[in-house]
Amino acid sequence: MRYEFEKLQVTPVVLNNATVETDNPDLQDRAYIYWRLLSTDPEAAKDVVLAEKLVITDDSNQLDPSLLDELLANIATLSSVYHKPPEAFVTRVKTTAQKTEGNDYPEGGSGTRYSESSAHAADGGVSPTGSSNVPYSAARQPAPAPPSPAAPVPDLLGDLIGLDNNAIGPVDQPATPSGPPLPVVLPASTGQGLQISAQLTQQDGQIYYSLSFENNSQIPLDGFMIQFNKNTFGLAAAGPLQVPQVQPGTSSRTLLPMVMFQNLSQGPPSSLLQVAVKNSQQPVWYFNDKAPLHVFFTEDGRMERGNFLETWRSLPDSNEVSKDFPDIVVNSVEATLDRLAASNMFFIAKRKHANQDVFYFSAKLPRGIPFLIELTTVIGTLGVKCAIKTPSPELAPLFFESLETLLKV
Image (cartoon, rainbow, N blue to C red; front, side, top):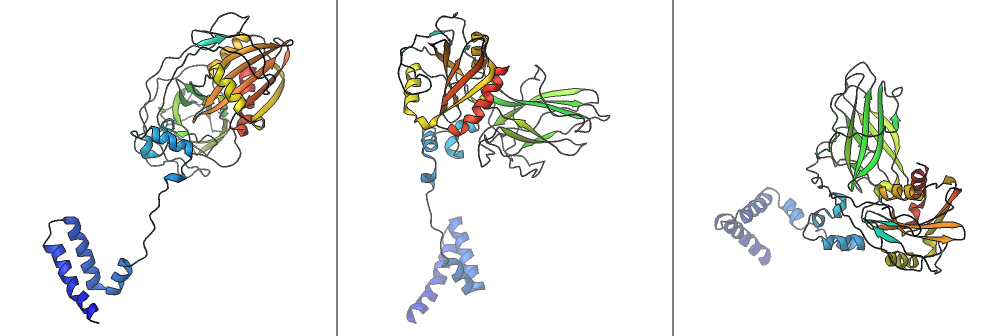
């Protein structure tokens, strides 16, 4: 009883000293809060002060080890603040030109060894033995990286088809794009006169969604907005859609910068890209597009020959996947290698096996996922076989789908 009385005597003195005798505003504010709690309802004050405290935990050990290593390597950058790798919010452009020398390539996609003729590096590309020294991939000139996304702006489209893409901020747009016609994803007959053509592309290491809006209606269209559903690659718009008013009978084309790993979906990998587009005069239009895997291959995916061999052998046989393309023919080696190099699939070496030509390539996805590729064919004859090894064999169907598109061009 005496102890309780002493506490009652000491408490006003402590609170008085904390509010009157100190110049520390934080201490004063806390003392005033406790004083008012005790003056109003001592039981409520007891519940507040003696409430069970949450246990302070450290969740840094819950990060993926590879991501944690990358964050530690970028400890003095925004990566350590966002807990994301730099490529998730900053464009990096890196060009490499490496010579490839050595022997002992895997035969037939297996781990056996064989002697192989050397390949030569020329102007940033590699040409196979027995062919001309025309470069198969030219080194690209680095382009200035676009600025990091600014603070988010309100989601104007709302929750469309379960979308989760609120990371929208202003991004500098490149010059008005031009080029070959884009595939139609929303015909005018479906869009009340609005026809949308679109295609995912990569330019200087940055992924864009190239869009064309053709107005076949009788009224001007403006106020265009876009949003992407959750997808395998986490693609989301890096900024708002920049489209001027489209008058009847005219069209407008634009490039929308994209970011990855912002809008990830669950389930098996898919190249499906679900898109919602709206303007001020019409309802929301939904359409499906494709996100081909080769669009995401990075410019630093070229491997040295020794590294290629070492990586191939280090991956288990269960990570090797192959597919036949009986309806594809390779008529020109040079044109095919140029086309693959333009998609950051880098030629490593070539060898002869019986009457067949075997080509080896390397490619890499963001976050360092390598693809080791073996193409076997008879030049000018129907039939191509592809074998790949990668730490992510679940992406093999997407790779083969993308490769078939490139070889059929």
